[in-house]
Structures are given as structure tokens and as C-alpha cells.
Image (cartoon, rainbow over all chains, first blue to last red; front, side, top):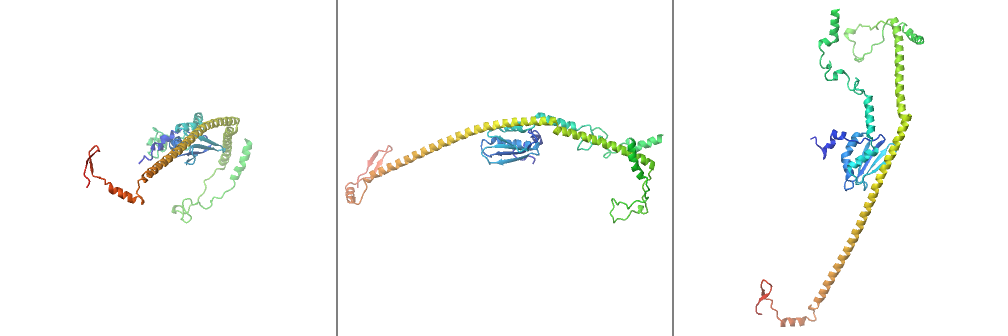
Length: 172
Length: 207
């Protein structure tokens, strides 16, 4: 069965790619302390349930840890690579508000993301042919509407080099 | 240009020295050391393809020049890329950018701290209120318990008084004889009927 869990939409690629929190490079570890019962932890619980998968999908190199029922009030803690720790108190907040807050303080801003996307586009020229790692296509036979690869279908006689050479020989 | 040729011709001269026609033992490639030589290749002597010395000299010079130029170009391009990378990471622009980012980061951290303080104040207030509530509830419970105790004592005292009253009519060893005499003298008739309102209606005669 494809549907697993309470909100299986959280497992779809579309949902994960919609996540908009991309951390700055200096954020290395994210820790969420929250409680499983209680009205004040409700926002944190929803944040963990809905937004953490998106965040982890967009930041695969950030370690995210969840701690349950260790402290009376919920909070988030970020560990940056210069040893700085950022504490975010989320008691009584709504999960959308928490997500906006986190994006504001430690997320890459839209301009930065745009600039990075532009740089990546500039580095790769779409008209180049080469290995799949660096270019979109390896050979013109991969493009729709062009002559198919002779490894799959043999070329018509008139296009082969040996026939043309023979014709040229017999003519001259 | 001439110095280059001078350098190249030394290597070219080494080529013109005599070489043996027979090569060393064959490289087996696909076959293992125990496989016999193929029947069609039994008497074969492999001879290298003939080399035209003049052509070889010219080719060698040209190739060496070409490789020199290519190597120089590659190094130039590599140096350009490295310089760009260096500029990117440590140039003046980078310092400025780093400082700006640092400032922005500090501003954001300050804003975050403000938010934390705000929530802290709200939390302290809430905890205070909860404590007061708890105190009040405790006081109320104590008062109620006191009251219940008082009620209990009062009820018990009432019962004691009632019992004391009734004790006056008890039969003891001293007035046993007297009470027996009284009972015998006053016979009581318990046979009576009552109607629906509860009034006594009929009394049967004493036997």
C-alpha cells in the first residue's frame, strides 16, 4: 500500500521540495526539545511533524536531533560551525510562526538563493555536449527529432561513410 | 624559435641510433602464461613498422613545440581560475562581504534575543499566576477540611447528648424490680389499626 502513516502527504516529493528553509552554510546541527503533552508544546510538536522533513530534505548535511520530555518548556537550538549556539524559545508559538522565525534568523535569503541559482546556471552551458556529469546531452542522437543512434537502428545506406566513399570512387 | 629547435634536435638524434629488429617477449594480454601460442601465429616474428627518420625528426620537433604551447596555455588558464578563486575567497570584496554578513548575523541574533526575552517575561508571568492559583486552592482546601472536622465533632457531640438523655430511661440492676412491677401494673396494648391518613382507627380489647 502506498499510503503509510497519519499524513502521508509529508512523504511526497512535491511536499518536500516546497520546503523553503535552506540554512546558511555555517549551521551544522539543529536540536529540537519539546514535550509530547501540553498546550504550550503544541506549536513545537506541529513544527516537528510537518516542517522537519522539509528542512532535512533541503539541508541534507545538517544534523537534526529531536529530544522529547526533557525540559518543561520547548525550544530549538542551533550549533554553528564557529562554536556559537543560537537558542530559539518556541513556547506557545504557532508552527508557522516558528518556521518563519527560523527562516529569518538562519535561513538563506531569497536574493542569495537567486544569485546561487544564477551562478549555477552560468557555470553549465546547455548547448554543450559531453559527459552526463557536466552537460545535458552526450550526442545529438539523444535529442528528439534528430537522426537516431546507429547503435539502436542502422543508418540508411546513403548516410554511411563506406557507401559514400564507394560512390565517390566509382564516379571519379 | 632557434633555441627550441636546438633543444629538440638532441632528442631527435637519439632516435636515429640503431635499434634491434626483434622485440622482447610478447605481452600475453587476454591469454594466461600457460596458454599456447595460436596456430596461425606460430612462426610469426613481430617487426615494428618502418620509421622514416627525416619525417620522424620533423614530427618530433613539431610535436614538442605543440605540446609546449598547449602546456603553457593550460597553465595560464589554471592560473586564471586559481586567481579568481583566491580573489573570491580572500580579496577585498570578500572581506567587505564577510563584514556585512557578520553585521547582519549579529542584528538577527539580537532580534532573536529580544523575542526570547519577550517569551521569558510572558512565561514568568504565567508561572506566577499559576503559583497564586495553587496557593489559593490549597488555602481553600484547608479551610474546607477544618469545617468538615468541626461538623463531624458537632455531630458526635449531639449523639452523645441524645444518648445521655436516653440513659435516664435505662433499666439498671437497681431499678430492675421497680420496672418489672411497673410493667406488670400497666399493660400496653399494641394491637391497633390505622387508616390511610395515619390516624388510629380501631383498638382491640386487652386480653
